[in-house]
Image 1 (tube, rainbow, N blue to C red):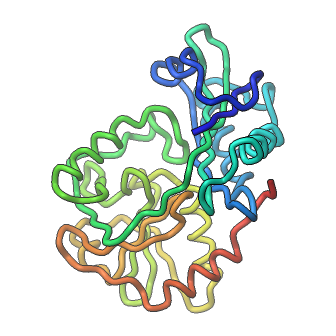
Image 2: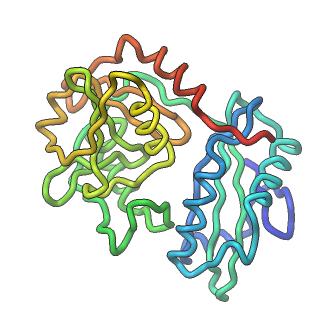
Length: 273
């Protein structure tokens, strides 16, 4: 893993003082897929959310850097560290240090595709309420996701399913949730406190652009999800993938899945590097 640090350029690792700031300070981050040939996926959307996340903790990003600085950092990492896989992960971080100073950096690592079968199961962890973690932002306060993942693994599942205190399905720890029933698409509404992922937003708009496809944002119970024909997970790195089993209940990959992804890929926006 390499990193681009503000004021320093490409470095082999993040300086210790910044790691301490990341551990104990306030900040926001993004996780971005970078295609080896086509460039940064949904760069502007990630930048916009990063701005909002840092504004939430009191940082005016525009007074420190521009989106072009992000692009410069990712280009430098791609040039000096190379692409060890068809797609790489760029993870911009911005934090307020213990001295009250704003610092930022971009980590660069190999992209790894999830493998099937993928299993999903409920864990007794709820999403944080809006006043502590706005659903649209990726803030450093993510320890509840790590707890959910540990519980899922202890039950033999690959991914945890988080539900709200009222019992409505919300999200997984690393992905947004979609499902298909009788040809219609569904996803938890933002009132169920899923993180409003960049890929969630893009996939909703793609489905709505397809003639004859309907998508509903709903409040649904686990029992309703269990009746789905297909369950999908989405995030910026994996894009869209299917779940093979939900707590032992077999789910199917849609017959047209590969054609959908080919069409969705054509709608994806890239910033060249």
